[in-house]
Image (cartoon, rainbow, N blue to C red; front, side):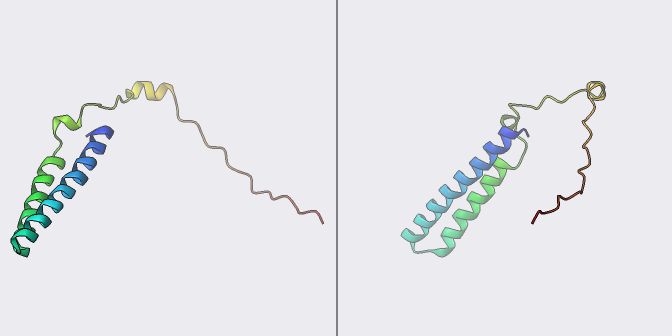
Length: 92
C-alpha cells in the first residue's frame, strides 16, 4: 500500500465508522433497542475492516519508485560530522 493509499484507507475508515455510528444510534433510538444499535455498529466495523484492511488494488495507484542498489552505491549517504563539545565561556 502506498502513502496515498494509506491516507485514503484512513479517511475511508473514519468516514465509514462515523456513518455506521450515526445509523446505529438512530436505529437503536427509534427502535428502543440497545442490542440492535450494537449489532448494526458491529456489522459496520466488520464491513469497514473488510474495506480498509486488505491491500486492495485501488490503494496502490501511486507506487514508490525505489533506487536500484547499483544507483544507491554510486551516491553514498553523506557522513554526519561530530559536533564539538566546546562551550564558550561567559564574560562578566
